[in-house]
Length: 357
Image (tube, rainbow, N blue to C red; front, side, top):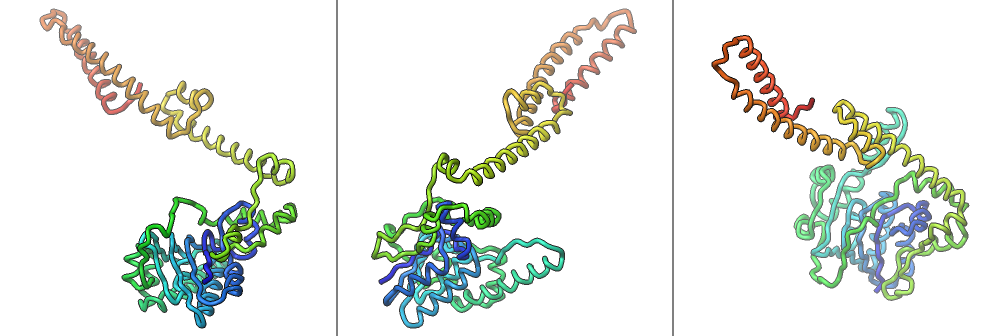
C-alpha cells in the first residue's frame, strides 16, 4: 500500500521554489499526482496541514476522488486539517481522524488591489469560491449548504468527536503512538510579497538549488530514503559571499525597517512629554531604551512615588497646623492659618487622585 503525506502549506506549483529555498514544509497538487501515478492499489493519505491555495486543493481533491473510483483511498487526519486541507480529507472513501486532531472550515480569503469595481469582482470571486467548496462538505455530511455556509462564515473548529458527529469523518483513531504532534508554524503560508520576490530573483540562485526544488514533496511510506523534501540550507556567510545582491537587499530592507521602528519608538515616547518627566523621557530614548508602553509604566510608578512622599509631608504639615493656638489674639493670623490648611488639603486630594506638580 502506498502512503502519501500531505503536510505543511498547500501551495501552487509556481510557489514551490520559494518554499523549498526557505526549507518550509509544503505540498503541491503535482506531488500528489506523481505519487498516485506510481501507486498500485489502495492508498493511505496522511494529512497534517493548515491549508493554503484553494486551486491546488481543488486539484488534489479531484485526483484523490478519481483514484478512489477504482481503488480504496483512506484519508487520515493526523494533526490538523484546516481550511483547504479540510475538504481534501473528505476525498477519501474512508475518512479517519486521530482523537488528538482538529478540523476547521472557514470562508475563502484573498487579497486584491484596485478600484471599487475590482474590489466588487474580488468579493464575488470569494463568494463563488465558498459556494464551490461547500459542495464537498455537503456531499460528505448530508448537511444543507446554507447551514454549512454559516459554519464556514463563523470559522468553525471541531474536535474529532464533533467532526464525527456532524459526519465530516467516518471514524476516530485511538492509537496514541500513531502521531507525534508539535507546536509549529510550518503550516503557515509565506507572505505573498516574499514569494513574489523569490520568483523575480529565481535566476540568481544556483542550479543545484533548482534541482532540489523539483524533487517530489510527497513520498511513499515504504521507501524511507525518498522521504526528504527538497530544501537548501545556507549559512550567513555563504549567502553573503554567493549571493551578494540578495544579501545587500535583505540588509538594506532590514536597516530601513529598523530606522522606521526606532523613529516610531521615539515619536511615541515624545507623546508622553506633557507628563513633565523629562529625565525619564531622555533615559528611555538614549540611556535605557524602552518603548512607550514601558515608559508609561515607569512614569506612573514615579508619580505614585512622588504622590506618597508629598502626601506624607502634607500630613506632617497639617498636624503642625492643628497645633496652632486657637486663642491667638490676632484674628488675621488665624485666617491665614486656615487658608494654608485648606490649600494643603487641596494638594492632598490632588495627589490622592494621581495628580502631579
